[in-house]
Length: 78
Image (cartoon, rainbow, N blue to C red; front, side):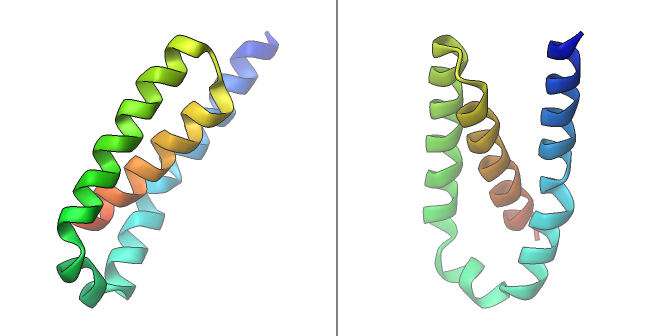
């Protein structure tokens, strides 16, 4: 039962990245244009790292990397 609660907290943490990414995109339009290729690289690195930490079983780092990937991808959609 504890694992279910931890998973739900992690999912809520990840879902909160969507509005945060949209807010950052609205506030930092100039930086997004200049660093678009670096943001794409950051997303790729975070997703690759997330796969590694799924294998290693470290949930805290996994959710952190996925959060960064979600926030960055939401920022690039604008």
